[in-house]
Amino acid sequence: VCFHSDVDDDWIKDYMKSQRFVYLPSNTTMDKLTGIIADAIKKNEGGECEAQKVGGPSTSGKKTLLLVDDSGFALRTIKSLIGDKYNVRMVTSGLDAITVIHQKKPDLILLDYQMPMFDGKQTMEKIKEIEWAQDIPIVFVTSVKDKEHIKAVLDLKPAGYLLKPVDGDRLLQTIEGIIGK
Image 1 (cartoon, one colour):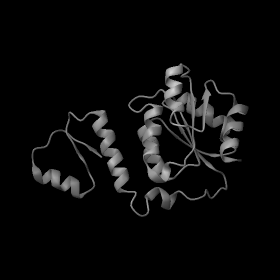
Image 2 (tube, one colour):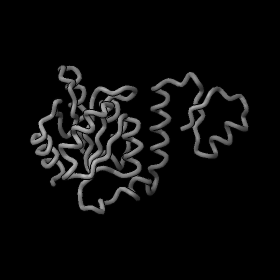
Image 3 (cartoon, rainbow, N blue to C red):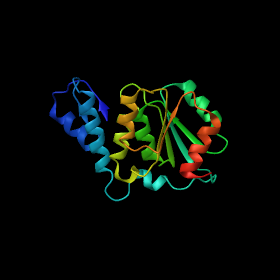
Image 4 (tube, rainbow, N blue to C red):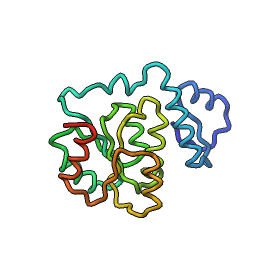
């Protein structure tokens, strides 16, 4: 996706389209952007997706977890609790999570709820729109504990919902219960 100011020259627009760029006017809304990204992902699903090619088993024998949280402190804390047992990839946004999933399909995603741009619920919805990624278990690890937000997330059927600060033993038990050791 190319973020670009308004361009009036048709040849530039045609070039960008031919090179897998997408023209985004300066007034593009977040809803429009997520639609464009979802369409691009769907177009890439026909046949072999890039993530399916590179997303095979880890060479270390460890399963791969994707941590998604906008807090570097939370990412480092969770990684310190599980990093010895699993390959851990970390990103700070829902959009980055979708990009990483296309690079290597993780065995499980640990997802924060409160993040800018895409919150955890929106991120999970976008992941579940990707046909080959629908089976990735997602566990929310978040400080959001009000009933309305929890119900909205539970309606999406995540594999788990843990409150921060997360207990290391409880986190490992949850992960092992979902994907094994």
